[in-house]
Length: 143
Image (cartoon, rainbow, N blue to C red):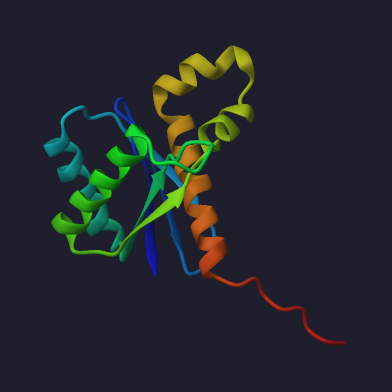
């Protein structure tokens, strides 16, 4: 299992990587604006990292309804599935960007947001949630 976590946005796409070790790590965000370039960049990354599964953040509304942003994530996930033929998992991403941003000092947030670091941290939280559900924690050894 080699997973690519994706926090899909209109300005930047946060990325993270995780495997059977169960630890998600951030990757540099994509700053491409057009879909064809995004897909090409993702294709290169998928080939380089030998990705077997894609995990896309699904920004549901706080009341569990599917709003415009969640529908856009669903459309993007479907596009990725068709283009790369890999399993694509939608993972609830509510509050991940806020959580990722909360670890950054307030005076640095604007600069780091533009760099894509916050987006990739959010993708890391999304992927870590997925990995935690898929890979059971080790059982302690009995004395």
